[in-house]
Length: 210
Image (cartoon, rainbow, N blue to C red):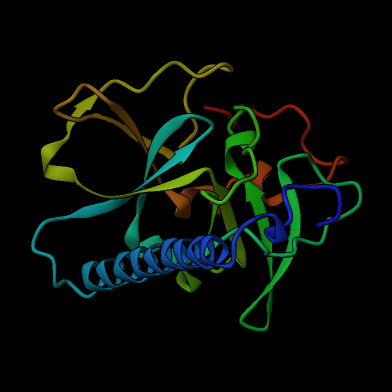
């Protein structure tokens, strides 16, 4: 882009070719990782994995777990055009066309009262499973891979700013390294009154933040 970076004319042809090769290799590895993760998720859904596993994601700097049966697709957020909606809450980012359907995109970290998701190549958009009956997707900071539930220990849920934790904050777990995870129930979230009313005229103060 004009005015940004350094022109490739400043490099010898061999160096420019090597830079292009390395960029292509990185993109190839990213695509391969995405395909492998999707295959593992599909295998988990079909019962091919003996142990119960869930998808780890980062939301507002907080590690969270999502039930694989409640998820649809995982899409790299970079390049996805989100059309903003007037007079919507700041956590409701807008609409995207996914497989011919308009899907609302929510910054779940912001919805949970955390800092908004910082844009970057690590961000992902994760759609709800069609069985939840809501054309919705979540923007997450990054995908952390699959986690085996039987290796995690249940711990008390952290105190919520407005009192009791919402019903969709299903469980708190701790792994062998002392890292705490928050399990989220998207089926419960999809029924939350606040979540379903993203307009400024809706429920401004509602005890649905964890």
